[in-house]
Amino acid sequence: MSEGTGRQRLRTAAPVLAAGVTVLLWASAFVAIRHVGSQLSAGPLALGRLLVGSLVLGVLVAGQALRRRAAARRAVLAPGAASGGTGTAGGPARATGWPRGRAWLGVVVCGLAWFGMYNVALNAAERRVDAGTAAMLVNVGPILLAVLAGVFLREGFPRMLVIGVLVAFAGALVMGVATARPGTGDLPGVLLCLLAAVGYAIGVLSQKPVLATTSALRTTWLAATVGALACLPYAPRLVHELSAAPAGAVLWTVYLGALPTALAFTTWAYALARTGAARMGATTYLVPPVAVLLGWLLLAETPAALALVGGAICLVGVAITRRAPHRSPAPSADRAPVPAGD
Image (cartoon, rainbow, N blue to C red; front, side, top):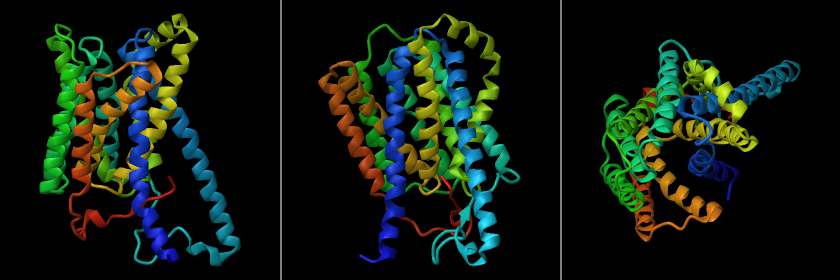
């Protein structure tokens, strides 16, 4: 196998691996929230998670900047090495800058809608409805995303993508029915779940264009910081609740910020920059079955047989979306530079 072929295979596999990391960590977040949710209320939990995530990402962004400055100094001393980082022949250019123009609006909308509104709404909803009902309602999000991406990002509606999303959603419904408990839901909880789904769809839709010029790491840091700033009104309650919470709740909050937020949202952005928004959205249908498996393995929570069937249907649906034919990229936004340095 030639070196060029190996690099091409790596470029093809990297987004899939990044999406897999995201799915695993987001699924683990449900286990973590189950531990900490009884000690921290919805808003403070979202703020604590985002503060940790923003801090971790900020350190990584600063370290990345220092490495680039060192590389620039070496390039001045050795001009022959300056050609690295401009992309390979026939490959995409490497974009490492800050958002420009309207891209800043995308960062703000993503931070408010997804990092802020989604987290607070979902945390609050899970106090009113059971996990199964929440899963069914929140999983409307990828369908909304597919519709919005098809219209506003001009990704269209490939037949296999539409079929796969619907099959995966059907699997999520089956899992929800298997885990729902009668009489545990109310109208405010249902509305909060739907609000979270809308926040997710709007957030991803706003994030996708930003990634044309800004790296996944920097985009995630900026959005997480916006979300944390939006949640600052919960700071007094966060301090009060943390002071009374056991050490385990503090550690789980740090975990939620460092891995399911900082790392998982960055690997998500990396994959999103290299994949259509609708197809990436469909991969989130893998989160519920993985969460069920983690609960089984880590918490000895034996899932209902119907939940396993629903998880299998989700897997089939996501596999169908991955078989969607690749369309030739248009000479406009689809040919935009791909972020690097993540």
